[in-house]
Amino acid sequence: MMKVSKERIHNRDFFLKDTLKVAEWLLGKVLSVKYCGDILRGIINETEAYTEHDPASHSYCGVTQRNKNMFDIGGKCYVYLIYGMYYCFNISTEEKGKGCAVLIRGLIPIEGIEIMKRNRNTNDEKILTNGPGKLCQALSIDLEFNKEDIIDSERIWLEEGTSPKEILKTRRIGINRGRELEWRFVGKF
DNA sequence: TTAATGATGGGCT
DNA sequence: GCCCATCATTAAA
Image 1 (tube, rainbow, N blue to C red):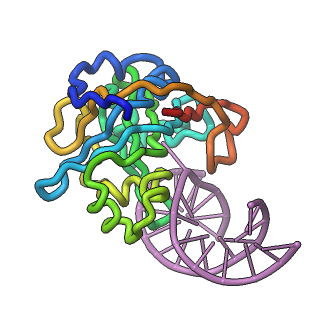
Image 2 (cartoon, rainbow, N blue to C red):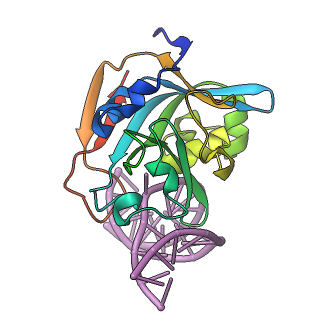
């Protein structure tokens, strides 16, 4: 069984680096959310990078009410409603004023699995958190987490976790512009 | 197995 | 009014 460190990540410097580097670095880290006295935890195994010069990014056309957290300093949560029904969870990257972030697209559940099953209304562990909308539903991440600081928040944080054995780079999912960029990262454990 | 489709609502031109 | 960084369900093969 793989070793998973619970040491919390408190250093903002990790998030100030190049967005592509952060997206790759996040693979293997543990995303943790406090939920009604319980803690829900999952290993990040899929991410995507979005930057301000990227036509697929929400930040491409400048600051708006919705995307303003993408322009905040690296380490802030950016949550938005997609297709009227699901939320997507991002962490901002680089310096304040740069509109970039990493979308968390997949987790491997490791704690609070029964609660996640309830939140997702399924008993199938394989489909609990293998998608950006699914993992938000499983961990109960919604707009209340928008603007939260992953460095010092008391209800959402990252832990050291583990290291992927292998990292795949592919094109991003579900976009129409910027398709050629291989800015999606998948970790194998 | 893969492909098509409906649900559902905010953002932005 | 059109476009979405999605997902579950149904239909087709």
